[in-house]
Image (cartoon, rainbow, N blue to C red):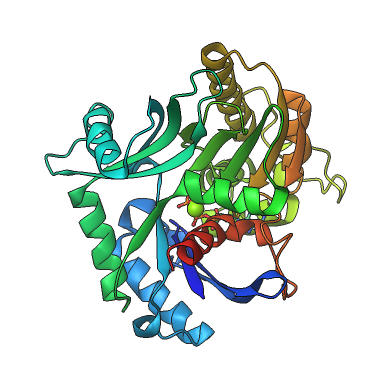
Length: 352
Ligand SMILES: Nc1ncnc2c1ncn2[C@@H]1O[C@H](COP(=O)(O)OP(=O)(O)OP(=O)(O)O)[C@@H](O)[C@H]1O
Ligand SMILES: [Mg+2]
């Protein structure tokens, strides 16, 4: 049994899974808001104490006793971690670790504390057979200590960590299998950030954090409808892109005045950011075709978003269902919101 925890800026998510005769089964899942009062939401005020409190409450709801959990894996989000694909000679684990440390120091987000490394071997290099391709995950002691403290204060004994993009890839691979040809794009659209990953078995790994997600959507909806943030959150979830004039409204014309789209809406800006990232990837990898975009995260089911992205980028877009191959999955609101927590739980099973 293992549990995965995703500390988000708006919600904490937990997924608990176990090995079963048919593969894997879902034992428990849940989410809890870290925001006390949505009308006063300020992302900068979200920190250790909000996360600890939300996790404790969520564990109580789910009847999980953190002290008894051995395999808890939590994720560290994008800007605190650097992930690079590197090629290196195939060598013994210890040797590999020290050679990678040298490489990591070049990319690490430095804060004056020691680098902390982790790596995942992706396989051998199809072009140079004596080399392997490794995903190097680098952070600093300071960041890991902070994360550890949150876990400890919530009552968990140890901490194993994953990075959001890696947890996302693991969740996706479990659901959809390996991408044999070309590359897929994963977009986890949360509250503060959108994590973009380009992933394919024979393609370069690429990840980037975009700073447009649910919070910016709500702010924009508030402005376009001249309402407060908490009211805008409801309008956003009910009407999606139609609430800012970016998609036909199913409810028809309700007679309300809305800012018309002379300016670029937040959704256009998001699409532009994605396009820029994919262009950058194409330039650097020679890859010119993407099979599909898989949306996950709490903002993934936003009405109209899937079609909007698909039409603007001319790529098929689908909602990721991380639990596609899992047994015992109950009806749930938005399975895609659990993608990262599920990816973390998968890692926890491996560690056993
Ligand atoms: N049904 C829905 N339709 C659209 N958006 C939704 C829906 N439900 C939740 N959201 C939005 O999803 C966001 C929360 O998603 P998620 O839990 O993935 O974010 P997070 O992990 O807390 O944030 P981050 O990853 O940025 O730290 C909120 O901004 C919320 O407004
Ligand atoms: Mg998130």
